[in-house]
Length: 269
Image (cartoon, rainbow, N blue to C red; front, side):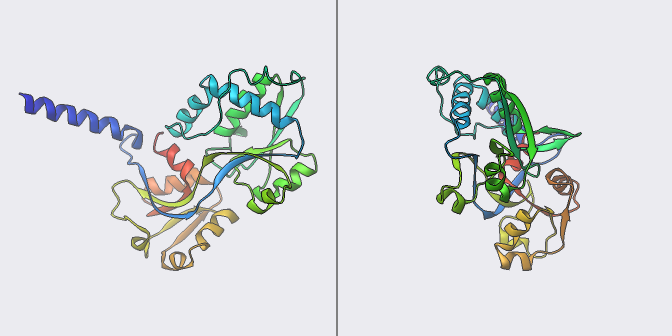
């Protein structure tokens, strides 16, 4: 009797552990090679008080548990790092006056920021919405290229570079803009379906790969020339990360090149 109960409990625990990695019979995703290590940060113009207000709002939202709620919704885990301070807004010298908050996002950064049926969506977009709502500001979102952060900020086109952007280390070191963060670690990796017999990058030789058609994705693949040469057919998809994972889950490719943030998302949805 005790043996049967133990076996039943073990099965329940196993199902609980794998629930976030599968849906409708779909297995989860595992990383087999890391190509680029990076962090996501926000960027503001140097000396712009917008940073102080956004910083205070994020601290309050984090203290209220809103940031953890969004992280769990999008990634299934509390992997976002921000400070907490429930009184942060009260400590500001002046209350935030009504205004627009214009953020620049890279819509190729699923699930941080992307377009769905013509509307902006993603973790960073939802967080920006919550910040603007708390401050009483009107949120406006513009698409930008990751490499144009300094140009967009210095020209006044945006107040903040936000959605899924890994900042240029050289520009940060040169003080071209003010970095806020990093708030999340996000590598560019090659991943396979859970249960695949591909365990490391050596076993990727001759295997088919699906990847986004962005310059960032190609640069990541070319960062390991030996691996790029050993891979089999590579399919570049202009429709983005979601289509890459559709290829993976339907067996159209053996592996995908993607961000770890996307892997967190697809392992829990």
